[in-house]
Length: 181
Image 1 (tube, rainbow, N blue to C red):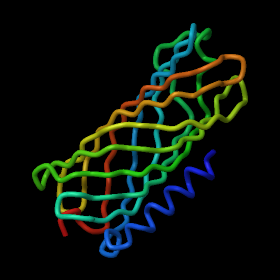
Image 2: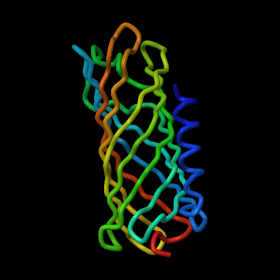
Image 3: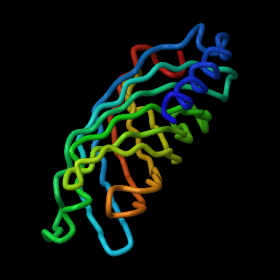
Image 4: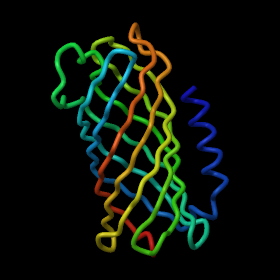
C-alpha cells in the first residue's frame, strides 16, 4: 500500500517539473499533540519530530511540495496505565502538500499523506492514510511557523481494532529560499 502511494506521489510530483524547476528545500522541528482513540481506549501524547521537503510554485498563488516526516516516541500527557496500549514508539511518513498564497504573509495548505506508526504495547507497525489542513505564516525571509490539524484512521491495530488519530502540530520551518522569492 505504501509503495503504491509513494509511486503515485512520485509520478505526480514528477509531472510538476515546471513547478519544481525553481523550487527549494525546507526543514524544521515539529511538536505534535496526538489523541489516539479506539472503542474503549484513549491515549494522549506529545511527539517531537522533524519535517523536510521540497516544493515550488506552479502559479503565483499555487504551491506544491513533497514532504517526509518522522517523530520519536510519545510523551504521555496525564493518562493512566490502562490507556498505555495506544502509546507509540515512533512514526514516519510522506505527504503531498498543495498550498495557496492567502496574502504574501499567510499561506493555507492541505496535507495528503501516508504514515507508518509503531504501537508500543502491541509491537505492531501499522500504516494509514492522512488528511489535514493548516496555515503557515512568514516570520522572516526564510523562517516560517506552521500550525495544522491531521486526521488518521488506522483500520486495525493488533487486538485493539480500529484506531483514530487526531493530531495538532506546531512546527518551525527553515526554507533555503523564501516562499516569495
